[in-house]
Image (cartoon, rainbow, N blue to C red; front, top):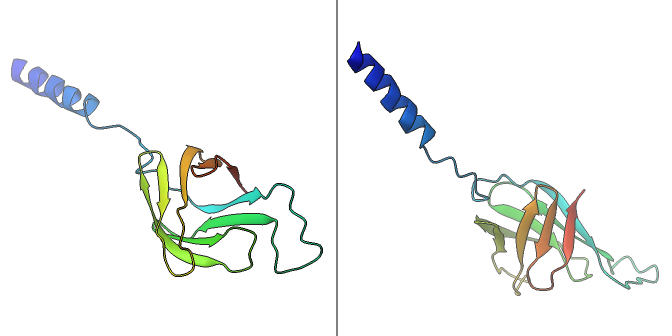
Length: 118
């Protein structure tokens, strides 16, 4: 009987000490986040976008419309701790990274802009 109690206590201890650190590495980000460019006036020109967006396609791929242009770039990303880092690929040849605030808000590290989930 003592052995059974000891085994149950040991199992309970092991379960309570398991790694339950829910860091953002396991955070599943999805959907579209947008940012309104300050003082943007496209004058009706459809090639100038006043809203930037990033859309997370899956756990490693993102579509990016940034900088007021009209070209959507597809690239890869990684989440490390609270940081999302985009790969530089093709025409997307500058640093883009974000700090995760919560499931609906991210902050661009390069300029501290707030991006909200649609």
